[in-house]
Length: 364
Image (cartoon, rainbow, N blue to C red; front, side, top):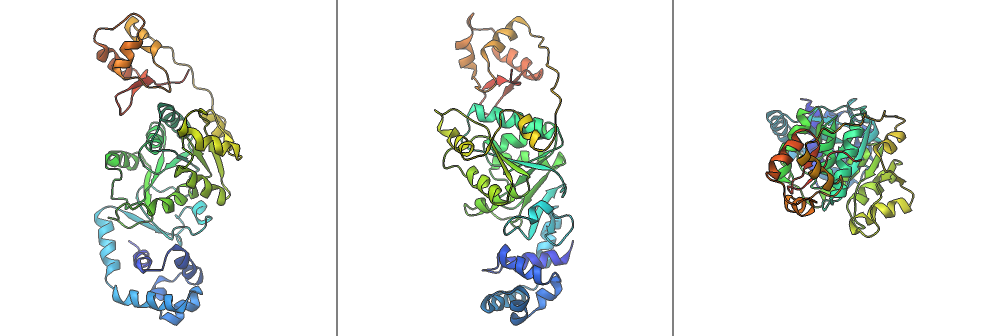
């Protein structure tokens, strides 16, 4: 592993030295050995940074001489790779944002020149938001566009899961890449790595998630993408911060409209009012990437009488529990309902969500 990157990581630990000041130092000198050994006056001159801060950094490097090797050993043991902004395989599109991360830790396969769209939304999702995230992510990823999201509960998780069905996805974390947050997404993160995608963070291995890390994480989500799609968001959603960062970086913002009576859709509807592109199908997003996707052939449903009864009461965007299905059946209860639902799920006709509610797998 490149020793220079781990020296850079230790310098970033110094209080007061963030991406902005470190970026100024690297603009003045990309020789990490020189920066590591430089005295305060030389550092102040190289980066045009305050002398007091330069003195603190010079002292910090002397006091933490052996920590770069320790961090390198930790990353190697945990199969974590590191890329700096000075290297060719650092994503070019991310270099263009304000205060880009100077160092990225990652697990999986980093594709620097991939075309990407960010998908974000609320942790408190509706069936409508779940269905939209799964559908848009799957159909966008099927066209070779990588889906970027934050691996949070709700819309982020569904965006990753949809993309995994047909293509690649990138998870950007507000903690170390060896930390699963939320814990239930540990398996999802491994599936992303195993599926040819990548899990990325600017935070060192072992870093716990803290509230202050997530707004900073959001700039990487939008910064990696050509455009940001907001799937479902309330008026004060953190997803709107990601959309704002995308606009600040000169990137496109798209939004899926929702009901005017649903508070969870207020953020998306307001974005559309303010000029975000209203999108109703994945093709609307793909159009912005100058991709025309052929309409998939319509599936012919081969349903048994019991399955047809169940299918008629289900919808694409409003999952129903088994009790709700029973109450909705026109001819009363069906014997062995769980058996028929399992058969329909195995055929790909219905989907069961994590709340054990069922909906149609395809929109009509």
